[in-house]
Amino acid sequence: MGFEAGQELLLSIPRTHVPAQLARFLRFMGFGELSTDIDFKPPSVTVSVANPPVKNGSGAAARYLMGLLAGAFSEHLGVDLAVHEASYNASKDALNLTLMPGDRCS
Image (cartoon, rainbow, N blue to C red; front, side):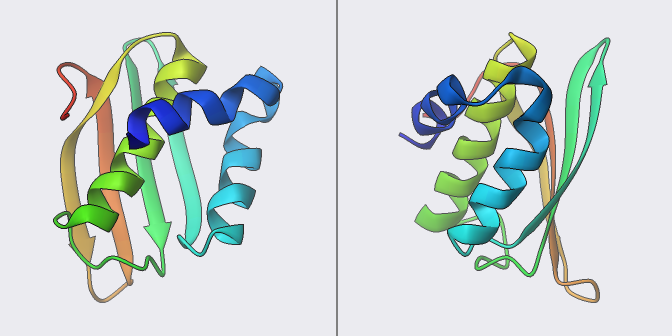
């Protein structure tokens, strides 16, 4: 559900504005402050969400947020990405994710 929502979110955003618009959307929705590092070859995205509403990688809200990000960046890069690493850094209050090609969680 989150993966598809992330893909649909990008349909109206120009490709060059995706990271900035996605960050604005997440902040508006109360999901925290997004920062990204995108590698195009091989495709991968390192994501940090500061002050997230979820403090770990489990639970429905965390799965939705991770799916939304995976779907959005999959659409942006043109390849299916999945969350390969998820961790919460309590000292920085940040949820850190690594998105890479591979099977996605349903």
